[in-house]
Image (cartoon, rainbow, N blue to C red; front, side):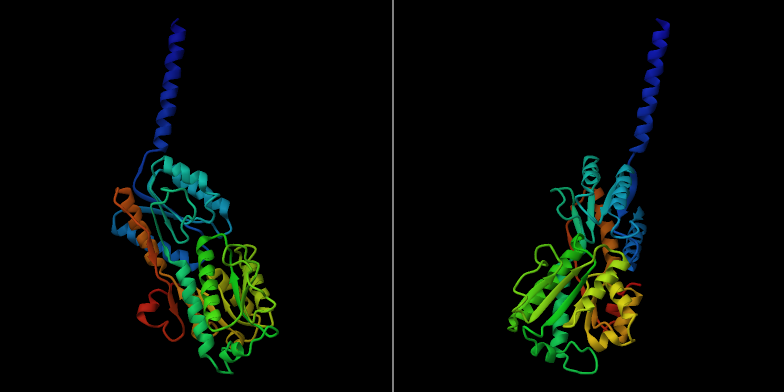
Length: 369
């Protein structure tokens, strides 16, 4: 009987210890936010991180900012989100590479009553009520702005010595001698890149059709609005959407090469820095002024390499975001959510810059390195 009582006491003590230890792992990390970004390979994310760090410091909170090595590493990002949930922070900020892949961890965060704020590409198609706010560039509007600026540049430019995507070429286009605008898309899984591409395609098609051109969308895009449409044979104006196999520099370069091999190519757009890097890699194999002497190129984001291309005139211009503010406002939203305050989406504007305005103080502050 005594041995039985001792055994029961021993088992009870062990179970108490296990429960106690388990409880230690789920204790709330006070005034702390976990931030899971989409990557670290681009300067954009470093600017987001700086904004987040400053917001945390200004409010006496702490953050842990992580992200996978590349934006193709979906499983790595899901592991990082799982780790963030297990830490039980006051809030989590998340920029999803693939919402479906992260759904189990998102549900765990909701069950643990951890407020979730999305940023950059957001968390598209997340279950209702899971994401309290999204802090992001209005990506579709930014893509449309890129189309407006590029099309205006094409129509305004009638020179013959530089930026040869001219109005004369457009006016001379026929069904047998087309005017092609290529798109070097890093991917179409990320909602931010899809929305930028969609905004660009829709606006470019609308602008060209408004001027009386027969337009077709071609390429390997496979999502609504960027997949092939229209009659390519009869079209005189083509919007050619080429999507990379993955987000690595090698594949983005290969996609850019495929676009530049088109003999009727006149202008090019890319919706993020990965595509920009691919285009620059292709240009490096040609003469110094090859880009500006042959095409009009419109980029997205900033970074030292892209800014150098724009300053030299090799890129016609680009759309920049405000990654510092994105990071700052994301942390502020997380703090407010953790404190039970109402939070709401905050769309941020994209801004056009080129060689003529990039040194303007109001623009230069947005051109992160």
